[in-house]
Length: 157
Figure 1 (tube, helix red, strand yellow):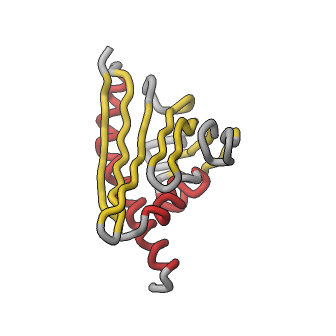
Figure 2 (cartoon, one colour):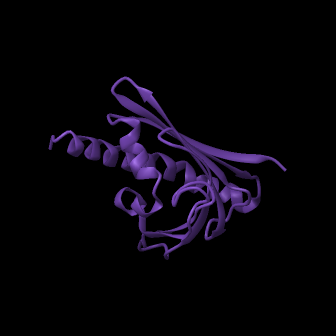
């Protein structure tokens, strides 16, 4: 069976640690992404939000869509630079979904790359259509939030 993938990449005018604060704690995702709520079912093995942590994300309800809750597990976390997770349950119609977020310093900012792979199935192909639009939009929201956070921590409006 083949694999499907989607990826998005943008540069934020924020330091990697500013971006990391927003992506390393799932409870902060509703602050910047299309989620209405989030929480942890299980803390990580060595830190609350580290490898082994299991969390849930509930999508914001839209007129044409009901709430969907996805359950994800942190597989790897390299402080300030890399987060790897897998979907382990919930509403995404994909099998063996694995995603990696990498943060790379670039000038005064951070290059953010969010990429995912999953098994090529009929539902997986349908999911790819939506994720091709979702990833760039989600990443743009993350960049906006990171830049705002970076501005607040520097004391600029």
